Length: 290
Image (cartoon, rainbow, N blue to C red):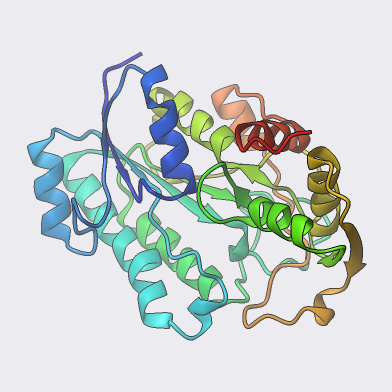
């Protein structure tokens, strides 16, 4: 395995934290940074850090992910999800660095009836989705060589705040809960995504920015997901199916955001775990598997 110097931005987030935990399994030199170490909103700050540490791969895990808050906090969402990506892409191009950027299923409108392939028409329905797509487009326009965008969905982890942890907490507090059943997709266990990213780093070799979809395997609703969390954790909270209109949110969510993962599987010869296997592992790590 080549000895890459890898900069991981946003290293305290869900994916960044999983990469950090996995890092000892790989023969890479890692530089895990937060906003205290490097100002990713400043191109010169990124460039000098990369030059000083001979960085040849950037894994960008930094993102503005507060989907509902983004509707009113447009400036900050645009800063982190678009402008930062532009600066990372410019530095990557100038210094010949591989750039791996994580994007989202929210770039689609969710009105499809079959799994989204990478080339399908984008049509974000929220500020979050729009700023993430704008970031993708900045990166593709600048086109640093050997760089990829990974679109993912429904991310959860041992780290950070996420749906799984919210359900575990509410499952202990309440006798019943209403969970949306008319939004369909697949969860992504951040550890599985982190492993995939670290495994494919040496294989990335493309002349233009390529987009890949990644989530765990399977098809389900948030309702199904919540039911399985309660079942695996042996919590007696009853989960009731509700429709999206019964739980209004500032940002519109895609009703259907299933991702077709054929491209990443064939290009990098990887197998993707079934969603229940990821959930099982996460609950075990959290000490909640019964």
